Image 1 (cartoon, rainbow, N blue to C red):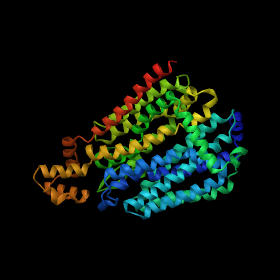
Image 2: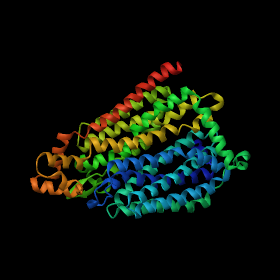
Image 3: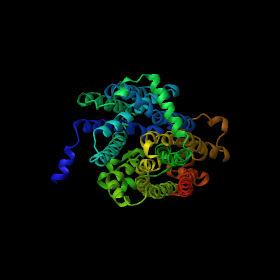
Image 4: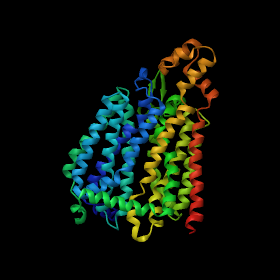
Length: 480
């Protein structure tokens, strides 16, 4: 007990301040991100913005691409101008972006506000990671980054939970929540102390920063083996991001979560809600299951896998994630979704934390830090392609209201010209009234005829292909 206490005392105050800033930033971001797919595409008659799936996909692809592509620039600028100044600018940008997202409804303005959020996040990320790195030592870095990873998931758990409660009042309150949490971070900056920076970085001019970034990028891209690894691992992120891009919409349109609500018992009122007279568990609450699973089991999994080579752990973990996604294809009941998402979470624990460890092992010893800086590229590219694929494939393979219109026209119940621009939720209600059936029955009719679950087989196949390619890459490209 004393040893453990002494270890925790080795962390300076700035370490804990940085982790607190991370917790609130993740609270704000995941509170928004867990519900944004539903908010953007829900019909206007039920409170959403009514954008098409393709429009949603493009917006998410570009915004999240910016979020993960710019941190290397944000880190360099922070080294030059100071961490506190960059954090203050990031928080101001984030708060303005969140607030604008909740107060606007036109596609262009919401898109611009989302880009503001992405820009603020891109400058926040490298500063916090660098702060954690600079406030730990060789003796405390493993524990320090373990605490940091735990904090990320705690924030990622709280945000969607609060957002789910607030959207019962109004969608606008979700974005006000995110902005308010970020503004609280500005107050916490009073307790933040600037870590030491390299004198060379402090004296660099902007043109020198951009020149160094270009030189480093060329150096990394000349390593074809490393470039091949980045290309392969991008497939994992294309698949994994569907947890946030596609699954919330799919649950909203196709999954009956009333069985999970009933199973929750006394906790039903905490994690569920009543909608149209029936208890359900909303998508953002279901997205909390992987975060909670990671909080509980990550230390156990890390210990169990510590003697397993990182590449083997990644290959198996990515395949398990693919199996979890593939499981979504075959069932519309909440309990089966719950099982699949638990499987997925264990795959994430086995693979995601070990990617950077693997990069550190395959990088030339004198260039480990440089290579680690470019480990964000697969995440950025995966988000771009994952977002575009999500919007395009969902529009073609899984859009409930598009299927409903096609069904009504083919049955001769409506003319295409009369319903082409009609609000999907209104048309759905009119159809169940006309047919004299329940919403669940009409959903099942459409599900059996159009097989919307096939979209998960596509993403699972991308994950399986990634796992297989990684196996051959390790066996033949590296040869050891």
